[in-house]
Amino acid sequence: MYKTFLIKYAEIAIKGKNRYIFEDALVKNIKYQLRNVDGSFEVRKESGRVYVETDGDYDYDETVATLSRIFGIVGICPVELHEDEGFDKLCEAVIEHINHVYKDKSFTFKVNARRARKNYPMTSMEINAAVGEKVLEAFPETRVDVHNPQVMINIEIRPMINIYSEEIPGPGGMPLGTAGKAMLLLSGGIDSPVAGWMIAKRGVRLVPVHFFSFPYTSELAKEKVLSLAKELTAYTGRMTLQIVPFTHIQEEIRRACPEEYFTLIMRRFMMRIAEDIAAHNECKAIVTGENLGQVASQTMEAMACTQDVTHLPVLQPLIGMDKRDIVKIAREIGTFDTSILPYEDCCTVFTPRHPKTRPTVAEVAEAESALDIDALVHEAVDGIERIRIDL
Ligand code: ATP
Ligand code: MG
Image (cartoon, rainbow, N blue to C red):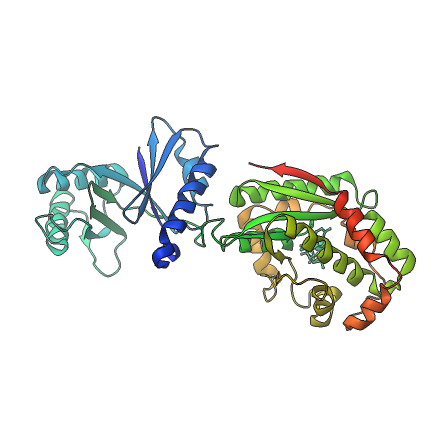
């Protein structure tokens, strides 16, 4: 049983002087996400490495699963740490490692030594050759393959000797919090949770907002959004979901505006309200699950109308993706099954029979001109319900 994990991070290692900011965020996020895992963990940073140390019993699978959801991590290596007690001891440790980890020894391997501590009496090349020989001697079924080995035996000479040969892939991306905060427009559909996940993966913390049209949409629809937000917290950490009462706005739109513009006017309200909430939450962008051409409100002309009412950048990470690729991610991150539950959302209830597909900004502005927009926005913002969501 391993006591330590070596955490590899690539993208963040190239950030020059800001590197410590990224490492510190990564360490903090790892500590936070591991707090729910059985076991006691210490996370520390040591010359360009992050180590997760366990103390006593812990749940290996759950630990690895949790680490593999933390943005910024590219590899999770269960590692053995040994005091430097000379080269012979090092070889013994490697042999023991192989003996423990690999039942079947008929594999090809390569030894990959690195010296972070240059005062070690052998060069990396010498270590590779000498350890390789010892492994071949101990396990005659093994073969060396320096180009395409099945097993890479890594030996790193640091203050301690690090031995590891397994690397479980992490999600990559950037540690949460290193790229600021954004509003996520979270519906109950397949797309917006995936959009949120993709932006969070770039290091952005999310403030999810849902527009709720009770009683046109039921409590179950709200529960569904709560579940989706909860599923996202496995990646995003805790979030505060903002439930915006949207019924009055939708009724007003239906009462006072031409039907073909309903969806667009509604989406403009969503943007205005999101921008208002953003200002109070230090959010610098609005994330949506829009996908070019998927529905009438997702043409370029329609998006021009929607985005016209906000100064914030509208991030649409799914814009050019195929649906099946979006679905694939939704399945991988665990939101798909919830997304396909059959509760209506506020858009479907008020969908016009013949939506305008090539609207202009001026037309939409005219179509909504009978409404007291500011008053409706303020009323909605005043009625927001905030729900803290955590794993
Ligand atoms: P999704 O699968 O995310 O519901 P969609 O393909 O159904 O997206 P639309 O209904 O046009 O697309 O909505 C586009 C985007 O607007 C959504 O991806 C989401 O970001 C946002 N949105 C739509 N309805 C709501 C809502 N009730 N609350 C919050 N955001 C919403
Ligand atoms: Mg939808």
